[in-house]
Image 1 (cartoon, helix red, strand yellow):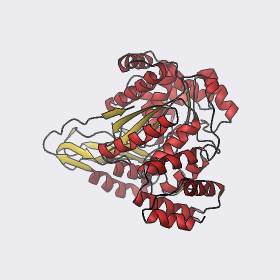
Image 2 (cartoon, helix red, strand yellow):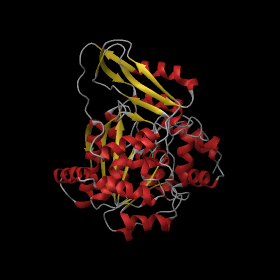
Image 3 (tube, protein in one colour):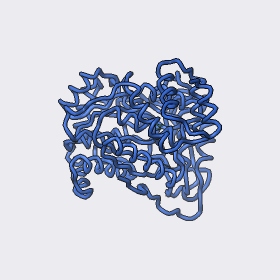
Image 4 (cartoon, protein in one colour):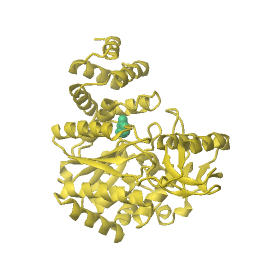
Length: 433
Ligand code: URA
């Protein structure tokens, strides 16, 4: 078998056999297939797609490419949550401690930023001292002791996805249903949790641009996970506008802490309480109404915030930054963007805003780029808000002033103003089980 023939077959729209998919996954994981052939392959999949059978085979091969964690010693309430990617998406930082405070077991592996979207692992690493790499015994011990640990994908967990994820990030091959579904579900199967709640984002800041495409992705992932014996829930959420007000690593940790303290922006609070409720409902076989009451209690009692602090401390992070987020370092520049006109914000292109935050240093343009945790964007006005000429819409944070004008133009071009008040955005479109 030759990788060259597999690339050509997929390029020309052919259906790959299980053996061909295995040849690619095993060969790429071992390093026998080079990045340039894997890039050509992912681009061929991007354009030609995959059948449901090919996607399932790719997922299972990727899951088997490394260790498959056995979490059975942690009981039957192990729950994982995964987002298909968004801008300002700090939901895991909030829902994981809520679920753990309510008795769910959160033994979770998260990813780094991808394309214009941020990643939980980068955000956690912005907390001084926080270790995202734990050995398996350390990870298990922490989960047994405090019910929660969020770490990066270990070297040997879906190594195929680890390599492909980083490659897709820089080769324009992220927005593909079979590649996203196999990437996410392979990791979830290998990570071992029994209950899986997927936040399937859709809109300008998501990889799936329409609710119909997001629904197809959600259905594919629920089907593969259910076939593999997991209890699946997919929540389709709106990502037309960035979630919450802050985009960028430290900025997002600060906002997540606000929500855990009972405050924070309304859209973020709502999406977090819903997702946490589906996590609880799945683990405890509870109604969604009962789950919502529990989740709101965990927030108002401070139990969720305590869980977050316990996790930060257990993973070597300095809890004083969570207790007093003003301790986080400030970037050199805080550049204000003002509205050029009066009107209502009719839409904001979240993808452009995500790319703008990457340019400021909050994400990577190349695999080897270093992130500036302080960099990012605070949106003071969002879709639906009224603005008058001269109002500050956003603040750009960075240490590198060379990109400020470019980012200002991008941001202003991403925002559409209208004279009439736009309709309120739907935040959750559908839940699929
Ligand atoms: N999140 C993932 O883990 N993989 C993708 O491909 C997209 C989002």
